[in-house]
Length: 120
Length: 110
Image (cartoon, rainbow over all chains, first blue to last red; front, side, top):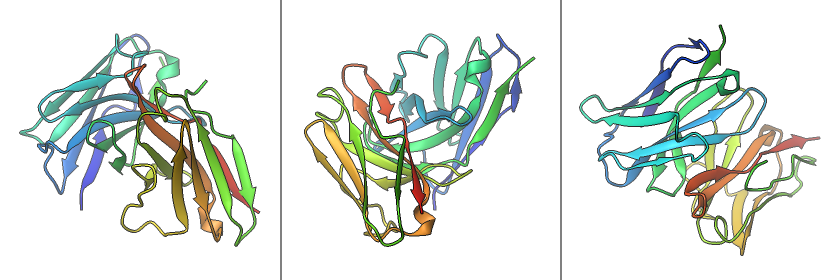
Protein backbone atom coordinates (compact mmCIF):
# COMPACT_ATOMS: atom_id res chain seq x y z
CA UNK A 1 0.00 0.00 0.00
CA UNK A 2 1.45 3.32 -1.07
CA UNK A 3 2.01 5.79 1.75
CA UNK A 4 3.08 9.42 1.71
CA UNK A 5 4.42 11.28 4.74
CA UNK A 6 5.12 14.99 5.00
CA UNK A 7 7.92 16.26 7.21
CA UNK A 8 9.32 19.65 8.08
CA UNK A 9 9.15 22.50 10.59
CA UNK A 10 5.74 23.34 11.98
CA UNK A 11 6.67 26.97 12.59
CA UNK A 12 8.32 29.36 10.16
CA UNK A 13 9.06 33.04 10.68
CA UNK A 14 7.71 35.66 8.28
CA UNK A 15 10.02 36.37 5.31
CA UNK A 16 11.82 33.04 5.76
CA UNK A 17 11.59 29.92 3.59
CA UNK A 18 9.21 27.06 4.28
CA UNK A 19 10.75 23.68 3.46
CA UNK A 20 8.82 20.40 3.39
CA UNK A 21 9.66 16.89 2.26
CA UNK A 22 7.33 14.11 1.27
CA UNK A 23 8.62 10.56 1.68
CA UNK A 24 6.97 7.93 -0.47
CA UNK A 25 6.90 4.33 0.79
CA UNK A 26 5.33 1.16 -0.53
CA UNK A 27 6.06 2.11 -4.12
CA UNK A 28 8.55 3.87 -6.36
CA UNK A 29 8.49 7.56 -7.11
CA UNK A 30 10.18 6.76 -10.42
CA UNK A 31 7.15 5.93 -12.50
CA UNK A 32 6.26 7.69 -15.70
CA UNK A 33 2.58 7.17 -14.92
CA UNK A 34 2.48 9.66 -12.10
CA UNK A 35 3.25 13.16 -11.00
CA UNK A 36 3.77 14.20 -7.38
CA UNK A 37 1.97 17.21 -5.96
CA UNK A 38 1.76 19.65 -3.09
CA UNK A 39 -1.61 21.04 -2.00
CA UNK A 40 -2.39 23.29 0.94
CA UNK A 41 -5.44 24.17 3.00
CA UNK A 42 -5.53 27.31 5.16
CA UNK A 43 -7.42 26.84 8.44
CA UNK A 44 -11.16 26.67 7.81
CA UNK A 45 -10.75 27.12 4.07
CA UNK A 46 -10.61 25.08 0.88
CA UNK A 47 -7.89 23.25 -1.00
CA UNK A 48 -5.30 25.01 -3.13
CA UNK A 49 -2.84 23.41 -5.53
CA UNK A 50 0.76 24.56 -5.19
CA UNK A 51 2.89 22.57 -7.63
CA UNK A 52 3.53 19.16 -9.14
CA UNK A 53 6.56 17.32 -10.51
CA UNK A 54 7.36 14.13 -12.40
CA UNK A 55 10.18 11.76 -11.46
CA UNK A 56 12.17 13.16 -14.37
CA UNK A 57 11.76 16.73 -13.15
CA UNK A 58 8.96 18.12 -15.30
CA UNK A 59 7.15 20.72 -13.25
CA UNK A 60 3.91 22.65 -13.07
CA UNK A 61 3.41 25.60 -10.71
CA UNK A 62 0.42 27.55 -9.49
CA UNK A 63 0.90 30.87 -11.35
CA UNK A 64 0.02 32.88 -8.25
CA UNK A 65 2.82 31.22 -6.25
CA UNK A 66 5.35 30.51 -8.99
CA UNK A 67 7.74 33.31 -8.07
CA UNK A 68 8.12 31.93 -4.54
CA UNK A 69 7.88 28.16 -5.04
CA UNK A 70 10.35 25.45 -5.94
CA UNK A 71 9.49 21.77 -6.16
CA UNK A 72 12.13 19.08 -6.54
CA UNK A 73 12.43 15.31 -6.59
CA UNK A 74 15.08 12.94 -5.22
CA UNK A 75 14.53 9.52 -6.73
CA UNK A 76 17.39 7.98 -4.74
CA UNK A 77 15.52 8.75 -1.52
CA UNK A 78 12.02 8.28 -2.96
CA UNK A 79 11.20 11.80 -1.85
CA UNK A 80 10.01 15.07 -3.29
CA UNK A 81 10.25 18.47 -1.67
CA UNK A 82 8.70 21.91 -1.54
CA UNK A 83 10.30 25.26 -0.82
CA UNK A 84 8.18 28.38 -0.41
CA UNK A 85 10.15 31.56 0.10
CA UNK A 86 9.28 34.92 1.67
CA UNK A 87 6.41 33.43 3.63
CA UNK A 88 3.69 35.56 5.17
CA UNK A 89 0.90 34.79 7.63
CA UNK A 90 -1.42 33.90 4.75
CA UNK A 91 0.84 30.93 3.98
CA UNK A 92 -0.25 29.32 7.25
CA UNK A 93 -1.95 26.11 6.22
CA UNK A 94 -2.02 22.36 6.37
CA UNK A 95 0.30 21.21 3.60
CA UNK A 96 -0.47 17.90 1.88
CA UNK A 97 1.62 15.89 -0.53
CA UNK A 98 -0.18 13.62 -2.97
CA UNK A 99 0.26 11.37 -5.99
CA UNK A 100 -1.25 12.61 -9.23
CA UNK A 101 -2.25 10.14 -11.92
CA UNK A 102 -0.62 11.44 -15.09
CA UNK A 103 -0.10 15.19 -15.17
CA UNK A 104 -3.78 16.16 -15.12
CA UNK A 105 -5.57 13.17 -13.58
CA UNK A 106 -6.81 12.51 -10.07
CA UNK A 107 -4.93 12.75 -6.79
CA UNK A 108 -5.24 9.16 -5.64
CA UNK A 109 -2.95 8.96 -2.60
CA UNK A 110 -2.50 11.68 0.00
CA UNK A 111 -0.27 12.22 2.98
CA UNK A 112 -1.90 12.98 6.33
CA UNK A 113 -0.91 16.63 6.07
CA UNK A 114 1.28 18.83 8.21
CA UNK A 115 0.33 22.17 9.73
CA UNK A 116 2.79 24.96 9.05
CA UNK A 117 2.28 28.17 10.96
CA UNK A 118 3.93 31.40 9.85
CA UNK A 119 4.54 33.53 12.89
CA UNK A 120 7.32 35.40 14.59
CA UNK B 1 -12.80 33.27 -5.50
CA UNK B 2 -12.44 29.73 -6.85
CA UNK B 3 -12.27 29.11 -10.58
CA UNK B 4 -14.70 26.23 -10.10
CA UNK B 5 -18.00 27.14 -8.43
CA UNK B 6 -19.62 24.82 -5.91
CA UNK B 7 -22.53 25.53 -3.56
CA UNK B 8 -21.10 26.17 -0.08
CA UNK B 9 -23.53 23.79 1.55
CA UNK B 10 -25.90 20.93 0.87
CA UNK B 11 -28.02 18.74 3.08
CA UNK B 12 -30.23 15.69 3.09
CA UNK B 13 -31.79 13.09 5.32
CA UNK B 14 -30.63 9.49 5.59
CA UNK B 15 -31.59 7.50 2.54
CA UNK B 16 -32.07 10.54 0.34
CA UNK B 17 -30.21 11.34 -2.88
CA UNK B 18 -28.12 14.50 -2.89
CA UNK B 19 -26.37 16.19 -5.81
CA UNK B 20 -23.45 18.61 -5.60
CA UNK B 21 -22.69 20.75 -8.63
CA UNK B 22 -19.39 22.11 -9.92
CA UNK B 23 -19.47 24.83 -12.56
CA UNK B 24 -16.51 25.94 -14.63
CA UNK B 25 -15.60 27.05 -18.11
CA UNK B 26 -14.35 25.80 -21.44
CA UNK B 27 -10.74 26.04 -20.31
CA UNK B 28 -11.19 23.71 -17.34
CA UNK B 29 -14.21 21.40 -17.02
CA UNK B 30 -15.10 21.88 -20.66
CA UNK B 31 -11.84 20.40 -21.90
CA UNK B 32 -10.39 18.31 -19.09
CA UNK B 33 -11.30 15.40 -16.85
CA UNK B 34 -12.66 16.11 -13.41
CA UNK B 35 -12.16 14.45 -10.06
CA UNK B 36 -14.02 14.65 -6.77
CA UNK B 37 -12.70 14.43 -3.21
CA UNK B 38 -14.29 13.75 0.15
CA UNK B 39 -12.74 15.31 3.24
CA UNK B 40 -14.00 14.03 6.55
CA UNK B 41 -13.42 16.30 9.53
CA UNK B 42 -9.76 16.63 10.50
CA UNK B 43 -8.57 14.17 7.84
CA UNK B 44 -6.83 14.35 4.49
CA UNK B 45 -8.98 14.46 1.35
CA UNK B 46 -9.80 11.14 -0.28
CA UNK B 47 -10.28 10.51 -3.99
CA UNK B 48 -13.93 9.73 -4.60
CA UNK B 49 -14.34 10.02 -8.37
CA UNK B 50 -11.71 10.28 -11.14
CA UNK B 51 -11.93 10.75 -14.90
CA UNK B 52 -15.39 12.31 -14.54
CA UNK B 53 -17.26 9.20 -13.44
CA UNK B 54 -14.89 6.43 -12.33
CA UNK B 55 -14.79 5.16 -8.76
CA UNK B 56 -11.55 3.97 -7.18
CA UNK B 57 -11.62 0.55 -5.61
CA UNK B 58 -13.36 0.68 -2.25
CA UNK B 59 -15.61 3.65 -2.97
CA UNK B 60 -19.26 2.59 -2.67
CA UNK B 61 -21.40 2.72 -5.80
CA UNK B 62 -23.68 5.14 -3.93
CA UNK B 63 -21.27 7.78 -5.20
CA UNK B 64 -21.42 8.70 -8.88
CA UNK B 65 -20.05 11.47 -11.04
CA UNK B 66 -21.11 13.04 -14.29
CA UNK B 67 -19.99 15.83 -16.58
CA UNK B 68 -21.77 17.82 -19.24
CA UNK B 69 -20.22 20.73 -21.05
CA UNK B 70 -18.67 23.08 -18.51
CA UNK B 71 -20.39 21.59 -15.47
CA UNK B 72 -20.05 18.46 -13.41
CA UNK B 73 -22.02 16.82 -10.64
CA UNK B 74 -21.44 14.43 -7.79
CA UNK B 75 -24.45 12.40 -6.72
CA UNK B 76 -24.74 10.53 -3.45
CA UNK B 77 -27.63 8.11 -3.16
CA UNK B 78 -28.81 6.33 -0.03
CA UNK B 79 -27.32 9.09 2.09
CA UNK B 80 -25.68 7.92 5.32
CA UNK B 81 -24.55 9.82 8.40
CA UNK B 82 -20.92 8.99 7.62
CA UNK B 83 -21.23 10.89 4.34
CA UNK B 84 -21.20 14.14 6.31
CA UNK B 85 -18.05 15.80 5.00
CA UNK B 86 -16.66 18.48 2.72
CA UNK B 87 -16.63 17.65 -0.99
CA UNK B 88 -14.35 19.24 -3.59
CA UNK B 89 -14.21 19.08 -7.37
CA UNK B 90 -10.93 19.60 -9.24
CA UNK B 91 -9.55 19.69 -12.74
CA UNK B 92 -6.80 21.17 -14.89
CA UNK B 93 -7.26 24.63 -16.35
CA UNK B 94 -5.54 24.97 -19.69
CA UNK B 95 -5.70 28.76 -19.73
CA UNK B 96 -4.25 29.20 -16.26
CA UNK B 97 -1.90 26.23 -16.80
CA UNK B 98 -2.83 25.21 -13.31
CA UNK B 99 -4.79 22.69 -11.31
CA UNK B 100 -7.94 24.27 -9.88
CA UNK B 101 -10.23 23.21 -7.06
CA UNK B 102 -13.80 24.15 -6.34
CA UNK B 103 -14.43 26.06 -3.14
CA UNK B 104 -15.89 22.99 -1.49
CA UNK B 105 -19.38 21.95 -0.40
CA UNK B 106 -20.15 21.09 3.19
CA UNK B 107 -22.67 18.23 3.24
CA UNK B 108 -24.84 17.90 6.32
CA UNK B 109 -26.87 14.77 6.99
CA UNK B 110 -29.93 15.89 8.94
